[in-house]
Amino acid sequence: MCGIMGYIGPRDAAGIVLGGLECLEYRGYDSAGVALAEGHKIGISKCVGSVANLKAQLAKNALSGKMGIGHTRWATHGGVTRENAHPHVDPDGKVVLIHNGIVENFHELGEEFSKKGVRFASETDTEVAAFLISSLYKDDPLLAIREACARLRGSFAFVILFSDIDDRYYCVRKGPPLVLGAAAGEAFCASDVTALLPYTHDILFMEDDEIAELSTEGIALYGFDGTRKEARTKTVDWDASMTSKGMYPHFMLKEIEEQGSVLRKTLTGRIGNADEGGSGEESAGKGGIDLNAEFPFSEENARSFRRVHLVACGTSCHAAAVAGRLADKFTGLDVRVEAASEYRSGSVICDAQTLAIFVSQSGETADTLAAARQARAKGARCLAVTNAVNSSLARELGAVLELRAGPEIGVAATKTFMGQLAALTLLVLWIGKRKGNLSREKELRLTEELARLPMKLEKILGQGETLRKMAESYKDAFGFLFIGRGASHAIGMEGALKLKEISYVHAEAHAAGEMKHGPIAILDVHLPVVAIAPKDDLYEKTLSNIQEARARNAPIIAVASEGDEDIRRFSNDCFFVPGTENELTPFLTVVPLQLFAYHLASILGREIDRPRNLAKSVTVE
Ligand code: F6R
Image 1 (cartoon, rainbow, N blue to C red):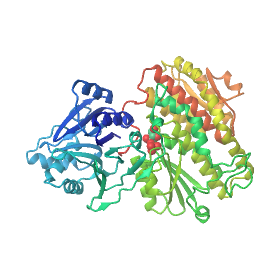
Image 2: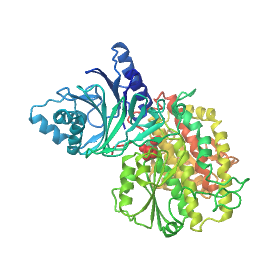
Image 3: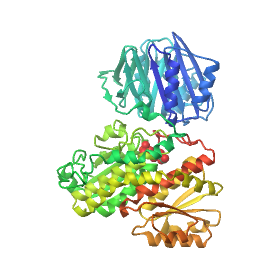
């Protein structure tokens, strides 16, 4: 949450900082601001609304400088006002600060300072932090920052300018992510690697409790105790072009359409090519799953697992729920799927015989990180399934299965969901295989079909216009009820979430069999029911639920398997997906739901890539 960008070097800092903020706007977009240092003079410009508003403001009152910092905000403390927008300056004007995170003891500190007569201009925790640093600053900025950090509780990523220092700026990380990059005579910081890709691919991922000094000489890294640390960098192979919309009107549409290629990448090298034979020892013979190189636990460890926990938030939790169904069927383990925010606050049985899988696109979600830390402390074998191999989750757990989806910019997750389905399916089947619960014949059938799925996805993606027309005919709907059974229930939850997030139309999802226990009461002609009813083992039961809904005059939109003529009779609209193995239907049924949500939001004129109240990476609890 909140996007941060900083620069020092020979170029115009304003352009670089604003460009970075535009790239990071998916992290927050209720207000934006920059501070530009020209010698010892620091100019600040900030406003409510998007970075485009800030650019327009700067076009009228230009600021320049060779060092600058900028922020795009997702409000936590204090409403969305210009006063609360970052950067913040301490009341003495010595320190200019931008911040991502929450300073938990800011009330306590604010009161202490107010008693001394300090008057704050905003309601934010950030301004209090700026004053704390300023009050401790004599002539050693590093010392002042270290002393301030010792007094602050909570989580924070800070970028700091000192008004009497024009050749350096400072970054602090305790919690929310900050990445740094240096090129000849330049040094950058940002909250996400995507903003640095136009300048460098050699990235320093700051760890917690680190302070960095950035100057034209490069990056000097320190611990909170003041010791100098090695400025380690990693090369990121993402391309800057991956972060552009290209010809698409929205990132979300681009990312939905990339799902065929994402699936191919996620599967590559992990399933043997049926024609060429498997690549790993385990998959000797044709086809087969091969996670030998990536599965971080020994054969012995794997055999000792009794439980598998799948823990995540939001869309990632829906992917986990799909995988949970598969794990029930193939692993023979006691399976638990839970939202990270709940998992971390319960007394979950979790020990060395537990495989705890944490699923997170960003690898920075605060609740998922906290849940993972807790499971690790209890001795569980923990694994991160993430798109960000250098994220906090991946680094802390040290055991990672990568999605390989490339950067996802749209706030509503789509292609990373596809990557999660693929990675988790492989993982669960791999465990099933090691546990002796997956027959060779079934393994081959599933992997051969997995390899065919990208083509089938592309066939669905070619029918965007059908889904646009369908969305058009439901644009006045009062809300939507999604139903499905088993993994299709999880897909219903994902469909409902996508719709809510970007169209702001009410949508809820229920297990189809639960409808009679309450939700059926809300059905009438104004409430369309979206039924996810592929031809699988649960099809007939779902069909009965569709008939029950129809009997209450609810319009029915069915997502069904090609060739299913029966379902037409009970539905107002049907969208057919190609047939596949029963266990793999979620890969196909989710796509029409993403496109339906996208088109409905577009018809309703919503800000699709920047839905209200949301931010892509939820780094606060
Ligand atoms: C929905 C969405 C969110 C995220 C959730 C977890 O479209 O994007 O629900 O799935 O905030 O984020 P990650 O996967 O980064 O942990």
